[in-house]
Amino acid sequence: MFRYESSPILCSTNEGECFVNDFFLPILDQGIVSINQRFTQLDHFNNYFGFLFDIGNLSTADSDILLKSCHDLQIMLQIVENMDISGAELYDELCLQLCTSPLRVLQKILCNCVGDVYPNVAIALRIMLT
Image 1 (cartoon, rainbow, N blue to C red):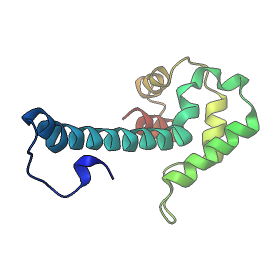
Image 2: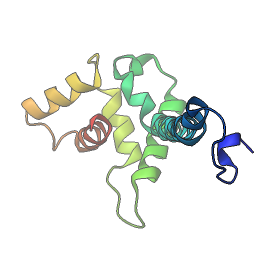
Image 3: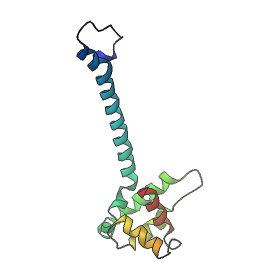
Image 4: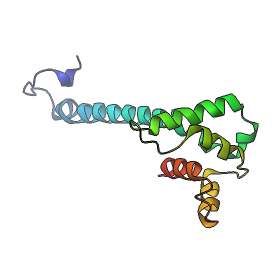
């Protein structure tokens, strides 16, 4: 147990130590917990969407790993019977992309009005980039 977690005691020492125990250490502890939660969320996000950040190099990626990543993303975005994307179709659509960044791919899809042709890529990139 840390000093600041014990039952409150009247500070008979100097005010600086009271400030550290009653204010600084609890704030620091809360900040550390918050940062750990954010990095855990970022790691979870990267596990599912990470392969899309390097969209320019997908042509050189292992096709089995890419297909598994697409299916994992489909499962993560699926709610019961409702699917936002199809993993197999996303894989097929990604194999056709030759652009260098996720934002450029999404811009090309939206500017050229081909969202109906690449719906899975458009949905996955919109979710990832927000």
